[in-house]
Image 1 (spheres, protein in one colour):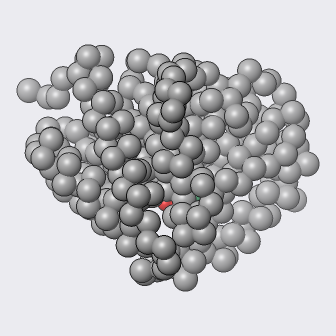
Image 2: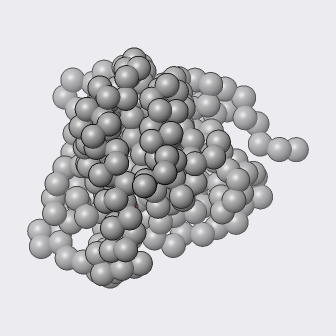
Length: 278
Ligand code: LIP
């Protein structure tokens, strides 16, 4: 029999998302080496990984194996476990690694519980994104709404709703760029088309935090091409549970394109992105 995906059962998965995101987030702040260095590079010389990306993912994997031994795991730093339960955890141990390397306080741990094929068609059913410097914990479960929990000195829980902005020309727009120079050149071309048609652009350096900013109405709309599943798995559920939509060039977000925000702005920006550049 398949996994119980009732709202209470999703609540249990959401709690695990929250607890593990906070645990790993506290680790990467508490144990950040004084002279943090690049441990390795991945897709390009600027696509870096640090020892703390690996330690954070190791903690997440160990905790998930102990608490949910039947589930699968897919992580940015290589975690890859096949499950039998129908649930796969898609995790980004540090989203915004370059910000973490430069000690810019805009990075997060992202943990999502998903159904389907994590390398094909999948859907998030619970998720959490934790910024360990601000102490802000964004979370949601499917059908349960999206929330911001401030874990600092003055804890609070706030329900999240996307922006009510209807006019793209007034929209504060988030985006990001890849690690490949040729890809960035293409993204710069697209940016020159988008910039004159929106209020302004923000580039924070973490897709997970950008999506949570959309859910909180701190950004009106967001678009990026080249995202991996782990960059967006939790954030996209938090946007849809905050009343927004998330799509790609087609109906589903994909590596080619992720667009998020209130439906009217997403459609308007989709048209700009799809329009002929010449
Ligand atoms: C980052 C994304 C960001 C994107 C960066 C990078 P990482 O993920 O969150 O939106 O613009 O190029 O992909 O590598 O820090 O996990």
